[in-house]
Length: 370
Image (cartoon, rainbow, N blue to C red; front, side, top):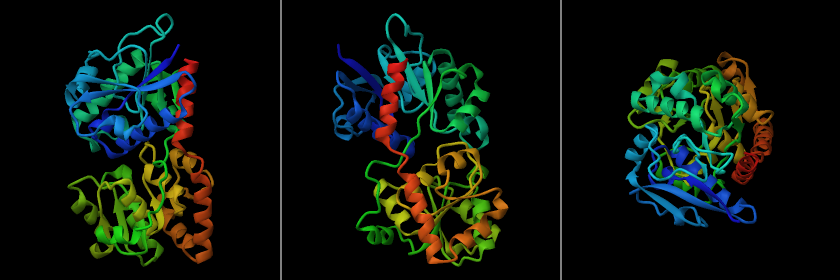
């Protein structure tokens, strides 16, 4: 008998958050490639959207398209309306799933969801209230109905259990990765020119929210005495002036700061190709996508010590106990070409620990164990 794993790919068809769309696409592709003998992957998607899921995730055997568009489907699932999608083995790369009562023992039904970011619970003031309420409501439904909840790090798993103790025995850790084949493109220089970016800069990521640590990162650049431009990647639309204000408050001239929003995979890789180092000063309890991408292409990483950073970096970067030490660590890291090269090698070695193929194999094992 063929086992069918039905994957919720709403973010592929109707992308709402860039990193979740990438994670959904990459995990879907990897699940197809890693499917055990006698198993296949099908997709559950909302109606509408401009992306053909069978083209973006080749090998999907079938697609269940609901009668609801993504917004309506999101509301329906939050209210516990299955919308004709429940039953069988269901895996969601996000919290978006038909979390309803089912019988895993007798009917072999399973529902597994994923949490990549704990901001709706720990930094709710930095998010729109409707998004916070949706995430919190869906986690409560997961506590009642999910057979497992996947998180990308053990640190996040422990914190999630503090937030929702009913999940204590159902949290599983499966890390994400950079997109398959993620590498600095051959046309990197042209891409950076098109983005109006300088050559040779320090890279930071995030927006003006306190948890992203941009203020500490800017202060560290000033304290280091390193005279390089600073590129900010992934700033939410409309927050560019606030980011520049943070830089100026730290003592950085606005002309040195280049703020960019979400970029596609090739452009992000090109930006990383021009970075001398990535400075990770954020304390957000979320999977650090840009850190993992920096490791993948061998960019030195200097990070403030958090449980997430320690778990992801291990010995692949420089970890500083507090933000006050970031400036000195940055100065030491860039003191010589040999130091930069050594840190780049350590980063690349650690980057090989993350792969979507490995994640997909763990997902298949998880559903088999359930």
